[in-house]
Length: 200
Image 1 (tube, rainbow, N blue to C red):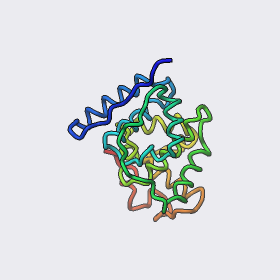
Image 2 (cartoon, rainbow, N blue to C red):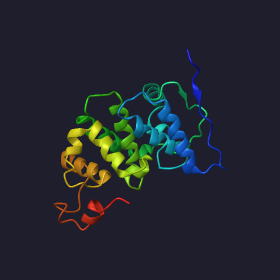
Image 3 (cartoon, rainbow, N blue to C red):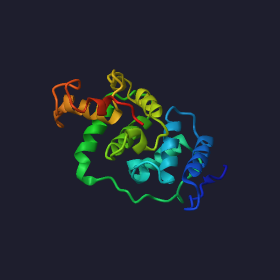
Image 4 (tube, rainbow, N blue to C red):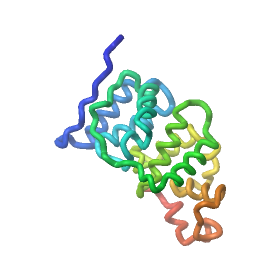
């Protein structure tokens, strides 16, 4: 049996962008060939090099993160990588639970990693920037692709290409009545351009 590959921690002297590219390449070299490999590789590389806003383990419990690694990047050891020290905000557990439930109602059913992805996206929604940036993805198209791959029926409802975080909360509002919108329709809302403008 081949020994597992060991990842060196990123030193403070390393350029973060170059370090992320190197780590992504290492993850890609160990990828198992599943649809979510690339997205998780981007997120993990960003997390480990200080980019994005994700908590440790991408917001998963450590055993779940270990299972994610074993499925998507078998043989790769991430035990020595630095931790961000950013825990999930326990005060928002109800919110993350509702987001996970919303996502899983429309999961594709093609991979066990759809459940992990739902939890990761919910954790990313707790941060304050564009969702793709908070997740540590490298552009918005990667977020759109993973939404269509993992939650196709939900993604298909985003017919106006609404920003993903706002779209998810709008879905919660419509489905559960938990969060109140400030206008009876998006078109009538003073924040219309904030929701539908370009994500830069």
